[in-house]
Image (cartoon, rainbow, N blue to C red; front, side, top):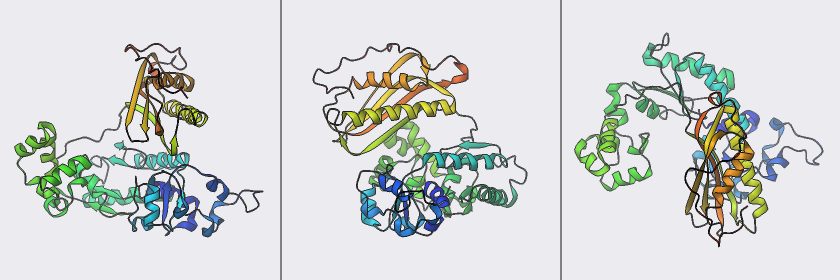
Length: 401
């Protein structure tokens, strides 16, 4: 989907189309004020709010990150996962709006349902992306798949008012890269014989699976493009990156990928986390941390209940003000999706980490998931001790929040 989070907001605020808009950060008072009349007595119709009334990125203060940005904002170098304070220096005139997860999930379900009505073999790849197998769809091979891609594009727009970009190729690897060629609202068809002309000139980071660290190491070895990667001997790559990764790099550089489109996959875990607008201390900000902690546990529980899962391993994640990370987890006897149980067990995990330092981030995770249908009695069972003995809390640890 094209700039999905931002595009969903533009359905609500069509007056912002064509303007630089970024989506990210937590909801602020200014966002609530926006929806109220000047005297605060009644709500305003979103589509009639004057553009001049919207909050600007130059006035943002905090440590939020950008979820996505409109293409008008991206022209200034603003992009996903960028800190909003940094983005404010690049595009101070951009309008900033918070993420509305409920609305995003609604449109996510709608566009995916629209696809499966046309091409039922679909693999979900997150809130805004899917893989589709055209092989056995009637007409799926016409014009190399372009006809079916146009039908899917039009059907999604008719159902949602949103645009998407589609890459069609012999395998998932090439289709993923092709989907980025003609954004927004584009269709790109890549054939096997297009490898050298269209794929090899791309940067190695365009390969799904080559991240920042591997990209930096390849750059140090003098490899910047996919073509340069393809020119390397497989044994040489295995010597630098290990047998499995090196062999994989050689295959993907030559456009080889036999991974299927998987229509059914089970999640391993579900989690919620938040980065604070300011560093919080377990003692001085105990009440605020306690509220945030409870909210995270509640949200994870709601995610589990909505998707029909329960889990046995409950854990926490902390990032301190010096960017060090700490994680702890504990396993209970029976799987659960109960918010109170999740909070109680996550609280036991918190007792096993030092809390005498300011915190930047807090997260809660539930793992070892199984479907609720397999454990119909699961829910709010008593907490059992972990099979792994818990470490005693440090006597100097700050009080639990």
